Length: 464
Image 1 (cartoon, rainbow, N blue to C red):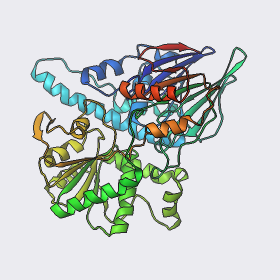
Image 2 (image 1 turned 135 degrees about the horizontal axis):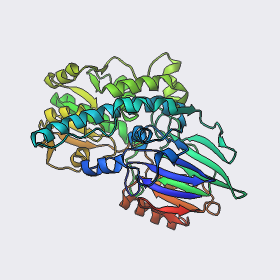
Image 3 (image 1 turned 90 degrees about the vertical axis):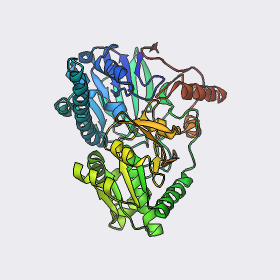
Image 4 (image 1 turned 135 degrees about the vertical axis):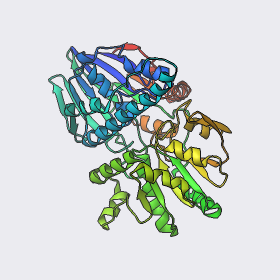
């Protein structure tokens, strides 16, 4: 069996790993690489390490764009096999890919206006909304813990990764040359006690483990501090009549925030509006409302009392562009939750441009910000940033809250790894993290007496 590492190697985007065994090719994730524009188009346009039509199965860990975002391009270039995932990931993935196709079209439209002025030929989008739709017939959704026989030699089972709705740990049991190989890919490994969803499952010790280590070198704030930080932010807004601007991923993070604000508003009797300014977040919230089987005990309590955890008096979901623009003319206090989560595209850019220079306002950073993104620059405390090509002074209060991260931190990763039998676990491959994080976690694992710990580079192949 060969494992080829193609994406999310020494970086956190573009998750993609190829398993070749018994004449079959299995792709784990097909994520969109997110970075500088030149790299973005070059890396995502070309599948240099395999031919798409030769892939037999695509197994998807969850529906974040850095794990599914290049599926339309894969299909456009010849893949026609099964896309296998959990049922919730199937539902979420369709919405996410349609939105991504829309972004590709709009992004190229904007770039081509500039190219036309310079007499340059137009570019084509990486893929379109129609390309996204063309993938839908290939998706197959399954339950957690349901053995899926890909063929007589390969069995797949999904376990709950506890990261977002539908997120899965992928467990492959492969018969090869008379031996049984147990391989696990964690996808993005979640945390205990996250809002809404159940905690990550502990799986049987595999022979080979491909694990994320996004926060392999860092510790999150205590989750107990989350509400107090949010409450402090609200009191700051009330005192100054200001706005709280929250860049948040439409999927998972926005729903977590709504639930937390629901609890806080009930407890403190706050009475001012929260605007969810993202059509995508609105669609995704509806899917979260449908998949109640994945709720944890606390969230299920709302249902027992006839309540919807994501709907209460002060939450408003905007739909039209006019509604979004109108928020800029309103005075606070108010909370605006908008996408994209890393502040690279979408309506959040308009809200930042309109509010970042007012010291009465706040920018609340609640998720991971990749290097070079606008969100990362704001989180790192830069005093001047560019939005839509214009320079803005950062005068609003900036608060970074990483306790909401849906990724396990160093302590939680070690706690998870300690469930494994060190003698049975033969090889560990660390992916989905910046190199400093992966190296830090590799050293920790060595100190914890784990062996054969690799940090693959893009294109590396391991025969196991």
